[in-house]
Amino acid sequence: MTRSEAANYYLRAGLCVLPAVRRGDEKRVALSAWKPYQSRLPSPDEIGSWFNESTGAMCLVCGDVSGNLEMIDFDLGGEAFEPWRESVEAQVPGLIDRLVIESTPSGGRHVVYRCAAEVCGNAKLAQKHFAADGPEPLVVGTKEYTPRRDPVSGDWSVPVTMIETRGQGGMFLCAPSDGYELIQGVLADPPVITTDERDTLLGCAWALDETPKPVVEGMPSPPSSPAGGFRPGDDFNERGDPRAILQAHGWTLTRSGENEHWRRPGKSAGTSATLMVPSSL
Image 1 (tube, rainbow, N blue to C red):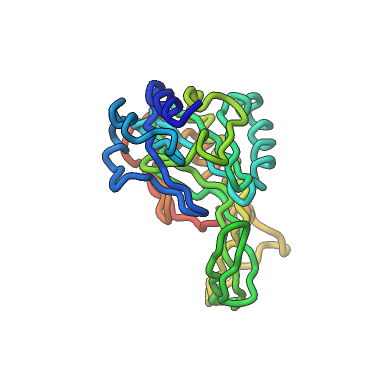
Image 2: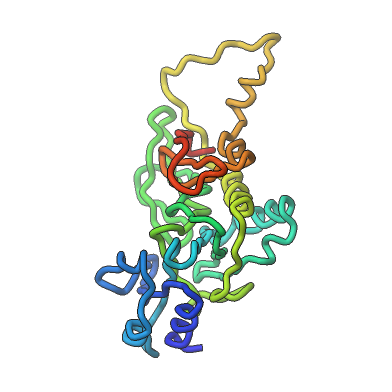
């Protein structure tokens, strides 16, 4: 299938497809401005002017414009994909088999689907820290990172994202762009999953986060527990995840970041509560 044929195929399926550029780690839309296409599909004439035999790559725009399209991106050669897949399969057998999966040039994975409800913006789900000897750039995989120094321990390290999403306002390169290969499903016909199924996909990714919990200098030690053991509250503070509790009771993450926005069950728009939690959760 040529680039032009693929682009028209995606457009007919209600997916916002745009020309893209991929040079090394640089991935971007090959247009001077593409914000309008976050809210409207391109016309057949625009597709005809953008795509031909020399077009190097293409991308899909996520979110409302493509029918609540969302993609979970597994980086670092896809090292977290198999543990994630096993966890999802254990919780919702058969869900993984319904999803669209493609491989990326770096050996990663894209997992693609549509959701029955609106999806939030791009979100980092799981990270991993790599130790560094100092401030000199550190190469992890194919990318170069600038180490950061922990203000308490003095250790140098770089946080590298293993799993993240592309949602409202985001985009991702896709097959048949060079180096992208469809492994499972039909990209022009991604399945529509429920909000509960989406919560399972994201929750299993969050559980793989390896970011160490921050240590605040000068923070007083917690009071000792009876008989030197943990009280229930101490145990939750050590191991608990408030996100899992919210998800279990039907809440939905609508905006990621340092101050997350959550929506209660039964509400279709807006924010019901905000949550500030350590990035390791």
